[in-house]
Amino acid sequence: DAKTTQPNSMESNEEEPVHLPCNHSTISGTDYIHWYRQLPSQGPEYVIHGLTSNVNNRMASLAIAEDRKSSTLILHRATLRDAAVYYCILRREYGNKLVFGAGTILRVKS
Amino acid sequence: DAGITQSPRYKITETGRQVTLMCHQTWSHSYMFWYRQDLGHGLRLIYYSAAADITDKGEVPDGYVVSRSKTENFPLTLESATRSQTSVYFCASSRLAFSSYNEQFFGPGTRLTVL
Image 1: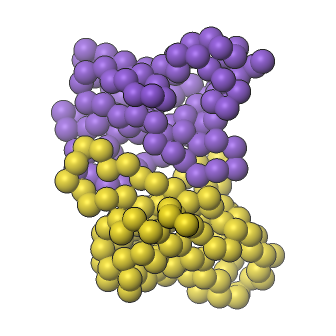
Image 2: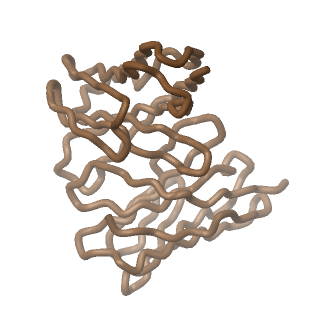
């Protein structure tokens, strides 16, 4: 499985946008970029995924670099409830397994 | 209630005892997974199952046994618990894999302490 690299932690102010980066320089053509997050004392939950084009959903946006070697998860207005560990994961098109790295701990200040 | 549930939520046991962690999902998802989460290691896959009676090893299967006689249940058994198996265990499920989506839905976790 191709590897992803994320910062250990980031901090944001409430109501401000947050950009969480992820590097995946060894990504293959059939790898999708998935993001999950884990709120304190809970199991992970799906956030968003994409292949080449930028993606939006009600939770976040995913911006994917043209060469696909990096991506950015964007939370448009961080709230205290967004404080969590965010995981960037590469997954083959029809794959089922997720390989979790250390993720980025996001702290949101009020 | 619909969803994915785990029981017990907390368990304390002693070294050498057999422990079974239960996982139940109501979506009829084909795939089910067991992960463990430890400080410094993140989430690691123990075992997974593509359907009833089909299971396969993940990254850290040693010391664990799984079975899947029914689609909705995926119990994880520690045959002889060791202190190194103290961890938080998460069960997850997902639909059959013919989609780029295949979101995994996670249970609330079981915190296991082996004394």
